[in-house]
Image 1 (cartoon, each protein chain N blue to C red):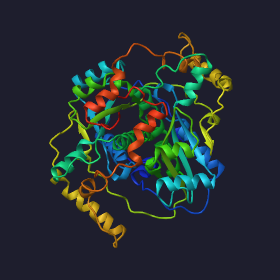
Image 2: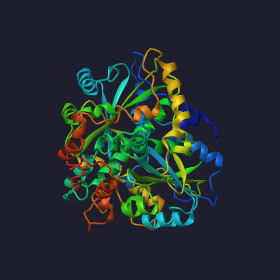
Image 3: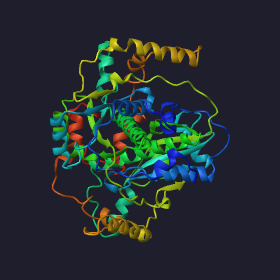
Image 4: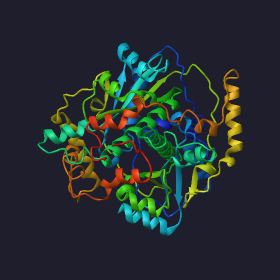
Length: 253
Length: 253
């Protein structure tokens, strides 16, 4: 294994959900934005934006959608937005049609731009000693989120990032062994769940150490359980509908 | 601006497309995989995989799809795969149904996992003095790519990463000013294309310096032009269809 400060930070990545009661400095925020902005972008189209929520009512509204008490609590809350509005405006104001902006292909490129920039932002934050949690829970009610944030068509809030000064020191969460994740040339379809027994044991131990009072689980039990079980349809199932209401990926039938 | 080695590397990011004729060492590759593996993952579901293509025929086939001569040429070629197959297998082998694995919601979570891991891999590579280019062009023909890589249903190759020892020193490509990308609380819908005149001038100068013999362009002209113009439908427009053939996002109507 090769080591340097960047890689050591990456290998020590923990999700931080508890932050000290202190906002990022202007300098810290500007640095995070700069890192996001210098990320690779598909075909140089730069199809993402960042909303920094400082307004207490907005933060409360996003917390309500997410259902997670730490969202919009201590620390700074950034919303990473898939943004095809800007490029649509460029084309329309230059007298052109919308071209391929409503295709699944361009939508996915914008999603990729947005997520690449998010990860670069988190890496920058962690390199400064800050911590963060990526918030998929903002999509618990996509239509309400779009409305709360007053976002125009051709945009879609994809993920949040709550970032700040860590106020907890979680254990490192064990990841799948690389044998199950990285392959040479051929994807192995002969996966056998029993081969994950050792890994399951390590995940079990991780949860046991984290909170001895809670029910302890393995990786395979989680995948086999509530995380992926079919339940009653809820607002998370409206994502595709809301995307199309936003004018995105209209060719997806 | 705050500076450290990680951030300075991020701010100096250039896409590298020309590599020396030397493969990554086993140590370098293991380090990249470790960085990928330690990336944040939605709901701890770890829904991505990496295919490392060393086989010359496979590399040629992906190069043909991408239409870019540097793909699968010098350096190492990694394909980042949205992977719901592994978790489907876990559930099926444990006697369960597929649950929510075929929903748009879970597909998008897997896409996010995949792209987060890709950016972390690129950051790790750049921190070691390597360079890389993210390859959206592998999706030029999604059905053919799935076939070439013999990928099972519930997987989808999303992006490539060609990585190696840089054999070029490109200029830094100017990004949109942050005024157009990062906002407090409210997304501004009063975008005016004329406000990009200064930025256009800097992009123009960048291309002029890069290659004085080629037609020089601005950002707005690119967005207003071929990158987003409607053309005859091609295989890139089959993405949604191929995703559904792969069993993904079946609730997207």
